[in-house]
Length: 194
Image (cartoon, rainbow, N blue to C red; front, side, top):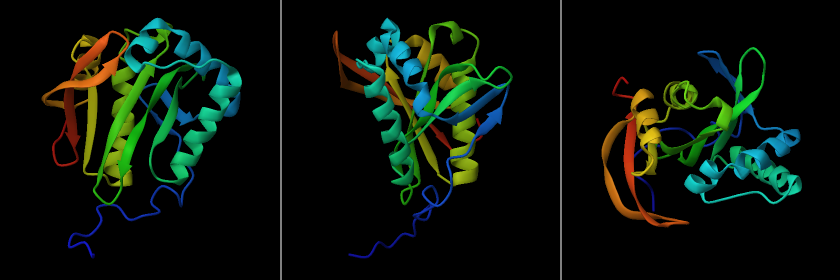
């Protein structure tokens, strides 16, 4: 059945290019490398990351396989993950990315986390803001969504600082290790300045 609406972004817009390195505000976002596996293991050993993401890695090999899946997801145009690094030292500070990319529909979700030593200085908001600028103004998406547990007040602050307006609350959306969490839905649109 033919669609009556043209795709917002043409198929191939991601797969036909290498995942870009994004740099602004003292940060460099680069694709994850297999040799970053130990950083992922350490990140997901952090109790805060485990709590909000409900995951962990049991080995460097498992983390390396996950990084390979992220590369395949770029080529499949379904998601994009960047290692957030300090632009000067290249130290990995965290992760920022796009989830559930729908090029034809012009939308995607967002994802981020920071290593403990990088928290509290605005890095998460700057990183997800850099991803949003690229996704909306270079890739050409129309809408980005950011979801977080209502119990995660820091993520709510990150969303607001990165220009994602609160749209509502979804009741008992996420199963977490401590039960079902209500989730805030924030969005940033290409037609609405942050």
